[in-house]
Length: 212
Image (cartoon, rainbow, N blue to C red):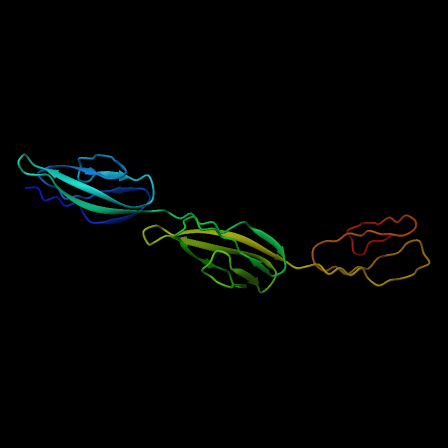
């Protein structure tokens, strides 16, 4: 008399699994949601059309009058996460909100950051990031979806840029037609403009010590 054994329950990463019914002298076949590579093979492959947990029935047959008998195995198809740390940013200041995205609703994740960066929370997609100094930093977001699937990691580059503090120099009155300006540079680059009567020309509008 048949005594089918459909094998142990499984969790697999992806949409494909290999079934493991026990070998038997009786013929048998698989049934359940999905596509079987060899429905009468106890070790058939099965491909699901969607993620989740499904039951598969292994039925063994014997000649009449013995009835067919069945056993059931459950397969959980787990979605592989694809990490997305968000778009690179360039911003003025030392604080920003990160903007990672979860590729799988049931996933969890965590941030790994370099020295000089602290986060309000290392385990959410959108923490506040604070830099101890201006500069460019690379942060990593790792997304996991159970131990069955490999973690996925993506990086985001954040450039924290200081605000400029222009100083054009002291006011002056001169009785000459040529004068050297004395701006004090801060960060970035600058350029001169003017308002007033007459026409001025600069030796270089981007030189803090330009001559007019």
